Length: 221
Image 1 (cartoon, one colour):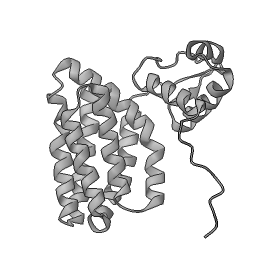
Image 2 (cartoon, one colour; image 1 turned 90 degrees about the vertical axis):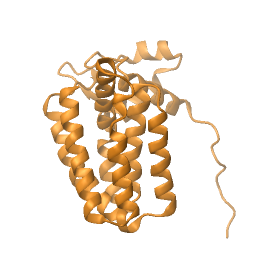
Image 3 (spheres, one colour; image 1 turned 135 degrees about the horizontal axis):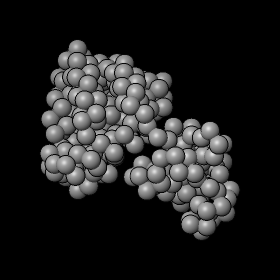
Image 4 (spheres, rainbow, N blue to C red; image 1 turned 60 degrees about the vertical axis):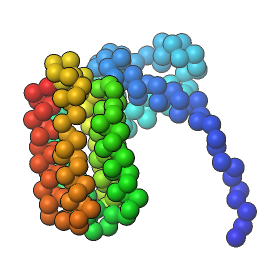
């Protein structure tokens, strides 16, 4: 075996840090929908040049979190009423297939990761953390199918799905309580049990029902 030509990168790049911070602010609503994202202002606020800002904004466009407005400016996406339904419809197709495959293709490590996620979700202390862990559960579910192209397809929905979850959890926690917002734990546990028991049909049915409830919850939140 030849010697590796590259040394591992141990520290995140400046561009990745800028991307992480801008994405966080958009997801959490600190950069509001349709408010112009001006490179000069963002660079000054973050203490960086305009280059990593420009790179991050292009990445966020690909993520579906930033769009170009009619004026030509870039701005955080404003979700419209049809977005949750369209995202839910697509998720049903992708995650339904993922759950079915995961029931036959999962490994012990997949099950452990899903169980650890459920435990972390139960211990979450903020709406933003609930949203992050909820998204992570569905990502882990898709990964348990061991179909790389399926994961690629789901990844196209990841950040818009995440943004909608943050908004939903923020509103729901404000209206009820943090504890009440953890109701989806029961759904997640049932899905994992079906996968563990290799019940492909049940796993697919449960995830489809779960996504339907998410769509209803989001409308009501």
